[in-house]
Length: 203
Image (tube, rainbow, N blue to C red; front, top):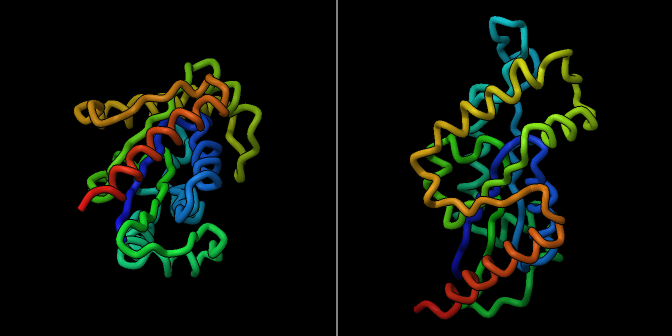
């Protein structure tokens, strides 16, 4: 059995979740761990000096819980899939060349060192400021974004968090989130399928 851990990160509303879900449908023996599932209770999320809730920091997330789930997959990918009710994603085992794929999706996955060190492939979704702001305004959040939240907090934090990973960007494949989702899926799926084939052929 062989494994491949894929990271799909980038800005808010860049298309990460759509791409990750589409990849899971295309790639056998795959599953998703989404960072958004690990937010702390709203009462535990701190506020900044402007009164904005600081959701875009690692301290707003249960990262140790997320790592436990990642480690659980690493120990036994097949059991993890079954526990998640994803038996339909499994293919008939061929023992030695079976490849299991974990897709980790989230806006701060590359900023958390213990997780970042596990990725075999890294994809970073990008869209321009105007497109990001427009998409964000059309999305419903609980609790909803307060007035001025995007310009006063979300965008500045994206720039700050991206700057933190600048030294490692040579490892990334950057994706234009404005391209048709079918085109992005085809490109990433081709790249991953080549990697999966390489792993299968590797002794």
